[in-house]
Image 1: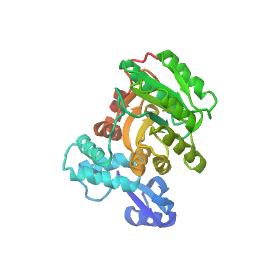
Image 2 (image 1 turned 60 degrees about the vertical axis):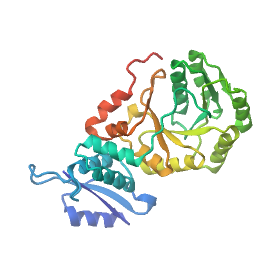
Image 3 (image 1 turned 45 degrees about the vertical axis):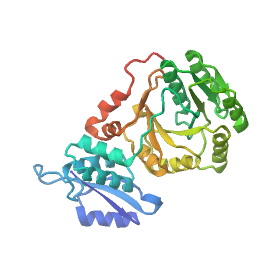
Image 4 (image 1 turned 135 degrees about the horizontal axis):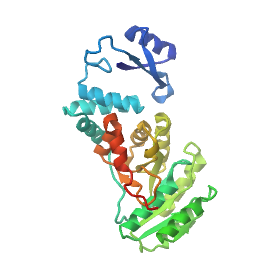
Length: 328
């Protein structure tokens, strides 16, 4: 099968381009708005007439390895400009193995900074839109710290969602960790100052905020500045890549530095995660690939990303990210 993407100011113009190049037998695979919301981008497919003919997936003469990386990135819904940069990185690496070439592309395209497991000078605050999985991510980070034999403090600033405090309190009780509560920037600063350096790591749960609502982002900025925390964007994998990019930019402007991807166990496409990290220049840190608290986090690396991206490696990669034993 031959695949190619077409970008045009209108649907009619894009369809004309498809018919001119691929003919009337072309099948529309996907449609989406172009970058910036101006125009459309359509991916079309055409079955090859000769099954023994080598596949040129995009008709552009790329090396087979670059074609494999491109096809995988298209499947994940990677935004066009980012896709071209990553494919070019795979091509210029001159590596003839798809996994290693894709790893080189992921290394060139993103920065990686897994969250520390031993100690850190500043508290980490999980931020993100409602339903992103911040509370469970905080519980997992606290559990990981306890299992490492380190001292951890957990603070909740989420008094917006009904039951949020009780949910986190249930986890911290199991871990033997006192849960502190803060209402607003001043209260958060007092809670952090009250720790007086007696912990190795501090994790803060924040309320789910609308990234497109100025008052929500102002509230978040107030929390960040009041307690001198490092915001970590928690974002569920899957979803629309363009929407995720805008979410990433909003939380990046509020101070987020890294991206923790959640719900990898229920997701097959990771274009949204890549789009958000790229748009806001966020470092990829960890992934949550299981509902289990005791062992549900794994650090991200270029090779881990490549294995998630390539279809032949994806299932194995996701299994490796899942805990081998769940005790909580």
